[in-house]
Length: 210
Ligand code: MN
Picture 1 (tube, rainbow, N blue to C red):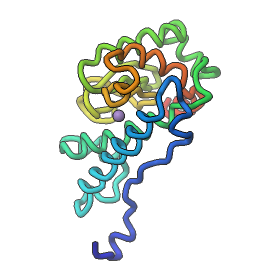
Picture 2: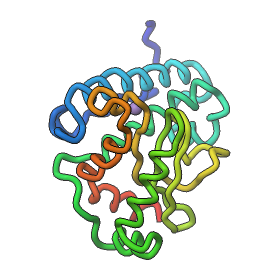
Picture 3: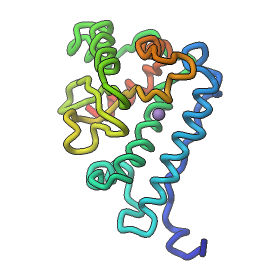
Picture 4: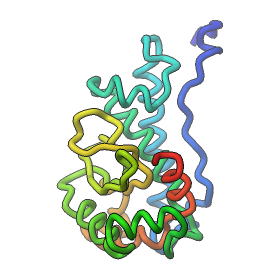
């Protein structure tokens, strides 16, 4: 590639580093799955997203802007969605996760879903009933918490996905996220997720989004 002033000025999207080791979420999420999921799947979305924007008038736009205004283009929808969704996913996981949220987020969960168990029931149902590949989301829309799911690498920042708001927690329910360890047992994988949720990060995102 010829290096020009333009290429030097424009920051490409980068695969974020995980804040923990591949095996840190075991036994809930296994090391091999984490390694392939981050190092192959997320890396693939990232490089394909960069290829899709390079040399176009989308170059230099934020990922949020691309999802909101350019998700009519398949390459942006699939790879931009994949890039954003996995960045969020790694952030809301932690080896010290699980338990229960506190503060404003806990109060909002109680207010909207009755209890943390009420949220889990609704979120589990959204994740389990999403047919094929997709994501389950906890979002903030107009200041209120909302649970929904979307297909493929769609997310709630894209117009017209059928659910909306700003995502503050997401669960990947593509088979690549769980098949090595859980095979067809998606509900077991969903149940395991609650042991590694980083509620501190979800609470920070809630504070910003509301
Ligand atoms: Mn994935």
